[in-house]
Amino acid sequence: MKDQILEKATDMFLTHGFKSVTMDDIASEMGISKKTIYQHFSNKDTLVKATTLNLFEKISCGIDEIILADKNPIEELFAIKDFVMKNLKDESASPIYQLQKYYPKVHKSLMIKQFDKMGSCVIDNLEKGIQLGLFRKELNKELTARFYFAGMTSIKDADLFNPEQFSSKEVQVNYLEYHLRAICTPKGTEYLTKIITNN
Image (cartoon, one colour):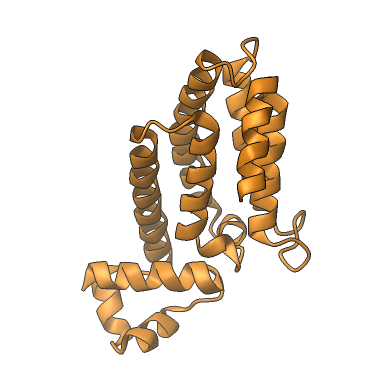
């Protein structure tokens, strides 16, 4: 039952936002009593923390699988973007922004985990791209990885990127292109243009 609650809560939080969904909503949707939820999660904060951790683990495993497929590093970044967006339901309800606003401790903890995960992945991706002549060899990899992470974090700010004005998909695609055009060699830019044209 605990896993079912976790799955349903994750789905509802991503669809409607962490603030908007109540424990009553989850109980009603599942056809169980609120008391049943409280047997597994003492309060909403605990449930929010558990869902974000669960989602983080799921996305991390998926990213690891994409990396193991040993794709071209530019293609790899697009595949990761698509996978993350699919698992975050295109972030139509700005769940990360709501998490930051209403559950700052959980959000901060998630950011630390994400940076640890993403930092090493981005550096590996950069190294692979440099070796293949797709990314500029003089790049400061540590700094570039931080720029990328900072950008990925800020584009989730619904005040800056109003979802009614810019769709999450549009923002993500444009940001990834922005990042890649800054680090690609002419060979890399040519490959990037092919991917964008085919998509």
